[in-house]
Image (cartoon, rainbow, N blue to C red; front, top):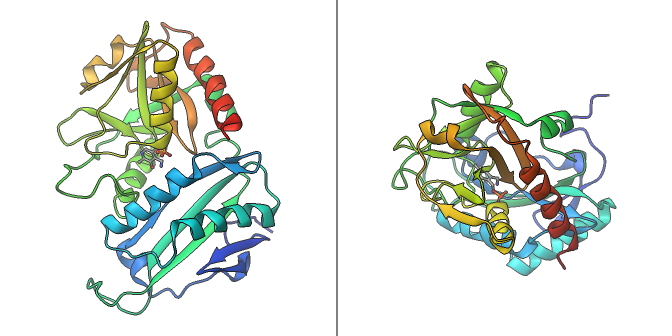
Length: 294
Ligand code: PMP
């Protein structure tokens, strides 16, 4: 039988208890599903230990607070639940997905009497987010017609489900046209990010990356910034115009799922001047950090 995300063996932590994976269900009438009234996290465990688990949990709670969802657990309870679940599933390397959503107490947009559910699931088949050959070759990106909105239109720091519609629209646009990924510009027309990752651009010993003032300042982005500074590269955060892309030798994406993934082309720009040797080195160095951080 097809292994979908419903049809798996194992456990899901659901409202404080371990529930059999196939029984972790919810009613179709709920505010989370209808109005994207939900927040989530994306984390990775390496050798049984989640990289920056506490930082992810903090962002989970901050996202929830930003959209007015009160998680009825403490950060410690969520941290412990993640670890217990990974142990119960007997996973070493896996993706971790905490999720909080408004339930079925109410319909309509009022949230004052909404109930909140929380779940955590882990799966081990996202060894790489993109196909291995694409990660080696580099991704082909196309600029999305959908843009990151201004910060007073939607809370951009929250990993909230609602804004992900922009990402799914962009990703579908790219895939329908035969590309791996979409590059999203922001409302001003500056380079922002890809659909689930941040972007870095290399020119000599300079590494440029957009200022995260209307999109997620990813935990991987922050890790990579520290890493490249430690290695003596000059890190430059600035507004980047799309027509500048051609000036760069290598480009890569960063994200928990994507880790570090090289980019081969964006629209008509092909990054062939470099051989991706710096990006490949960063991929190795990043792996060392995530597997060796205690
Ligand atoms: N931007 C978007 C839209 C994302 O979904 C993600 C993945 N969470 C990122 C950037 C990268 O964030 P992180 O490095 O924290 O996974």
